[in-house]
Length: 171
Length: 297
Image (tube, rainbow over all chains, first blue to last red):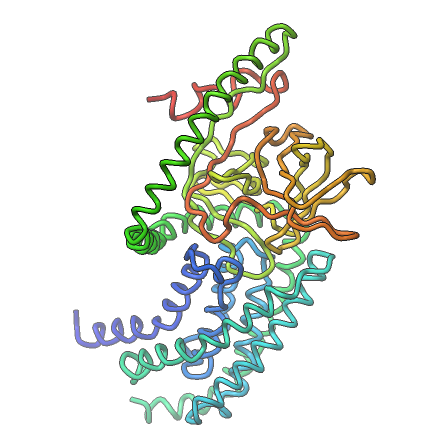
């Protein structure tokens, strides 16, 4: 392999890390964990990942990739097809448009941003689900998922920032 | 290389932004269109869904194996600490169960005699297909499981799915090597049930909570917390008499059922092949050993 091709290959491989990590998280979120709380709702790993990468590496987490991840998750979870892709695209859109607010600022601000976004998305998803099933869907699981997600957000943001600073520094 | 590319990017910037914006909006529109298509139950969507799960099921099996191994290790250590008490308890339980077994044998024989006297049709042999749970629904809106058995193992839509302690749900979608189980706690689940003691019939209605509701009971039915609820077999889709749970609470409008199944610890489930006697072709009777893998070996 010539150095140029090797370099390009390396770059593509590194560049696909955000997508690959999010894909893996999509799989993990449907694997039965046996953890009591997670049996009712799994935290929205996908939402966290899409939010983080849309802020910090928007060109590696583009809208088509977000859409594919959403559709894939809908297929896996058996939920209404198109719901996750719609919600993830909205998270992506909000994060992209507001990324100037978050990049280079304190982590607490990002966390707060995530809380605001995740809460509005949770409420929106509940409204869509009610319309989709044409009945009153219990609100509790939605709120529970939102709360668990916001609690584990710092952990994931920390892991992603490690990835970002070590593997994706120059991409 | 960044400075050299910067000028190119600067010129292409507006075009790129417009493209990105329109792609974003198009994808949002596509998602909404998918929601409508999915709601309309278009066949293509279901095929796509089962294909995807078929492809990803082996991956999920691989991921879930270390998770299971970890849980087994933890529970082993936990059990080590209470070996003696456990042993004592099991010895007592064994003695009790042996007495029950004697009673059961007598009753079975008695039943058989009455059946022969009446020339009654007996329920067909129900053969279980045991499959691993490789996925549950991560989202808050549906209660489903993904199992690693499908059409080639003899799984069909509508078959009952049971865990060791009781009914879990029914098969909703089947792929070649994977199937989706609609849990009886799901919003869309309706299971015909009967109260074991009083024989009053009702419908078990899921609402995504862990405690499904019991509805359409006769107005005169006497229900009390602790009554056992079993499948009634009405409609011929599920075998009769399978345990589901006990009545957990009775209020003015709502009767709720506590299921025997622990939803957080489902590792293996059995899909029951069942058809009413005389209503199916004997050649593909689900109880027929010839069709199953058990008979093949």
